[in-house]
Length: 67
Image 1 (cartoon, helix red, strand yellow):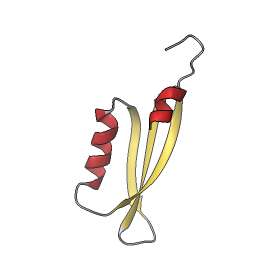
Image 2 (spheres, rainbow, N blue to C red):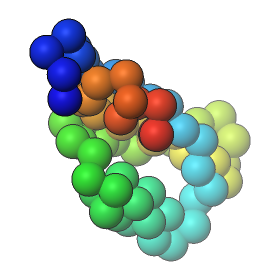
Image 3 (cartoon, one colour):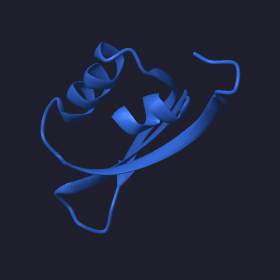
Image 4 (cartoon, rainbow, N blue to C red):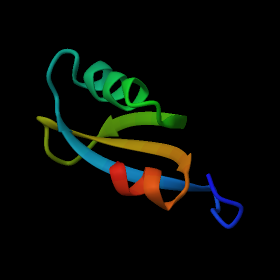
């Protein structure tokens, strides 16, 4: 990382299917790539088969671009 790089927190919102293991698969993908997860939550939407996942990560522009 260069001196001028700024590390910021970013919030990402995803819509995922309500299927067994969906939360685990997404969380595992982020941590396997080495992203700094600050928080991860999941909740219901108006659509019965869809959930909203909210993830907060930190990183510079390069890291966020990879996400």
